[in-house]
Structures are given as C-alpha cells and as structure tokens.
Length: 347
Image (tube, rainbow, N blue to C red; front, side, top):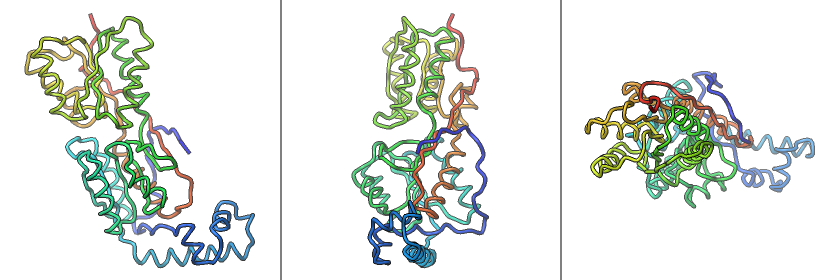
C-alpha cells in the first residue's frame, strides 16, 4: 500500500504510560501452538468469516497468550540506525522519533553505520541479540541479503526511513524526492539559468536516484540547456574539495547548482566564498533538506519534514508491534521550496 500525504501533525496513538507491546507470533508459531495448519491460520486472520468459529477462537486465544508472555519479556527498547550523524538531517529525524518515544515511555538506542553495508548488518544483528522491540533505520543503500532474510522471515519489526532499501512489502516513510528536485531545478530554470550543475549525493541510494531523475525531468522540459554532474556523497568536505578543484582549474561551466542536500551546498558555498565568487551574484545555488545551517546561511532549499518523519516512524513501528498482521504501508510526504537569498535571476 502506498500513500501520499501532506505534512501534518500526528496525534499520539496511545497514552504516555503505555509500553510498546511485543511482536505478535508468526503464522508458523500460531500453527504450532494450535495444531491448525498455516493456511487455516492465515485465512482466519485475513478472512475470519471463512473459518469455523471454534477454530478462530482457538487461534485468538493462542495469540493473546503469546502476547501476554512476550509483553513480560519486552525490552521497551527501539533501535535507530542512521548512515551518518554529521549530517544534521539524520539527528533531526532521530529527535522526532526520540520525542515520540519519550511520550510513550520507550527508549531509543542510536547506532551509526557510517554508510557501510557490512557495519549495518552487524548493527542489525547486535540489536536483535539485544532483544529490542523493533528497529527504525535509514539504510546505506540497497538492502543486503541479510536484511532481505530478516524481512522475509519476520524476525523483527522494521520501519525504513528516508531511503528505500528496494524490498517488496515493507513499511517506509519518505518524501517525494523526485518532485522535490524537479521543483528545485524548475525554479532555477525559471530564473533564466541555462547552464546548471547537478550536485548529487551518494550513488546507489534511492534518494539520489529519485532526485537525479527529478532534475533530468525538469531539464528535459527546456531547450538549449547545458548540464554538468558531480557527486558529493552527501558530504560537506567532499563537495568542498570538488569545487575547490574546479575553481583551481578555472573551469566553472555553470551559473547555478541544484544540490541534492544542504550539506553539499554549504561545502560548495565555502569553496566559492574563499575564492571571491559571490552567491548569488555569480552563482545561484539551491539545497535540499532545510537543516538549521541552511537558514543561518540564507540558503534557498527544499524543506523535508524531518522531525515529523521521525515521529511518524516511531508511531508506525508501534502499530506494527501491536498488530503485526496489518498491511505494510509506504508513506510519501510532500516537500516544499523555502525561498531565501542564494538564488538570483540570471542576467
């Protein structure tokens, strides 16, 4: 199920004294507890009117007993895996989840993968060994075989946040990255810029892929556009060094930059300012995320509701833990341009 929603505040689904319940039993576990076939258990949960009353009650009683026992074992802990703690975007999402967790009496354990898939796998194993009740994670890229197996076997409830790991039938909260970058690039084009550089993020991530596609879509609607592409890994220093080298070479074939995040945009701005290149008089630049540093730097950017994303992830995880058999949901939030002073009309 995929749902497009507008930015809105989500009400608390439970009171502050509630604890997160343990996950429901799997179909296989219910079958073993009740001596009812897996097919019948599945039918009883999805189409109860097709199963005998006595069988349904037997299954319901087994689930309730399992929940009572598991609730006693609940750690009341949630794992939160981020790829990068230096980029303000991820700690701000975490703060949204942490605020929601505090209101429900839960605790969040935060671990950073450093955009390393192997480290990410080790973190997931560690969290499972710690018996956390569930995991919220933003992946380093596409899902590993281990993560595929965890999802397939329903080993632990997981909410994916921001980046899509490209696994079927998952819970995901993200934003419309395609449209956000399309609108961003379209804005530069309406200002008269015809030589534009796309400053991409980490290749292989769903966010960069969608943003690059949005950029190309906007460019394709105009004639006579010259484009350049560089990839800054969503990192300040990588971006800074890219533009430092371009300035040194004397080759800057663009009048505007559409950046796939604010951190890279700020790295570019630092390189330009150190070399007497003015923003926006000489080069216009638009970022993506709207982290606090963007406002301080008067950076025009695409705003993502990061704190709301974190809150929604925690509430959605709680919903999974309490009702494992509900349909998986993909929530896609809208993004909007925040106009500041880093972009100007091309004269």
